[in-house]
Image (cartoon, rainbow, N blue to C red; front, side, top):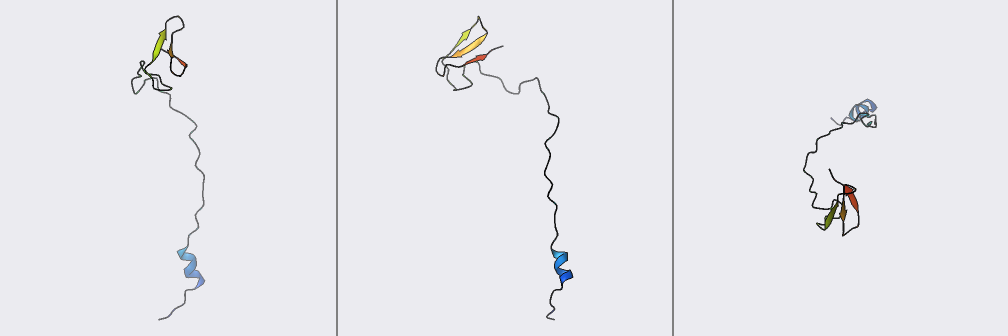
Length: 72
């Protein structure tokens, strides 16, 4: 009744797992369609609505954070 576990029993209970690091995918999907509409009246950097449109250079200018970004 009082059986002592043998070495064979202990080996069966513990399994060794080999750790393999996952590789990143080598191909990436390129989509041309935008999933959400861009709000051109809001600065993408600071979120301010204090922007101006420069038609000469086709850019928006944010007067709050002084950054520029392209427009379509």
